[in-house]
Image (cartoon, one colour):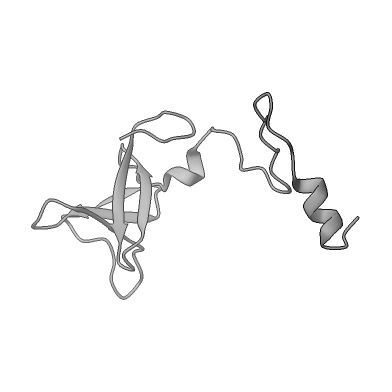
Length: 101
C-alpha cells in the first residue's frame, strides 16, 4: 500500500489496541515497533518492552509517521471551497442570524 501523503510504500499493521499503524516497509534496527504476521496473515505491530522484548519472529520497523516527507497537517480554519457559479455563500447570513460578527 502507499502512504496517501508521500506515495511511498508502507506496511499497514494493526496494533494490540486494534488501531491501524503504517510502518516503513523495510525493517530498521533503530526502529521502535515490532512487526510480525499472525496466523491469519494480518500484519500486527506492538511496542517492545523490557518485560516482552523483540521475539525472533518479529522485525523492528520505524513508524512511517516518523519518516514521512509528506506535507505536515495544517491547523486552523479549513480553506472554504470555491462555490460553483450560481451558488450563494450562506455562511455570512448564518453568522449574522446567530449574532456573531
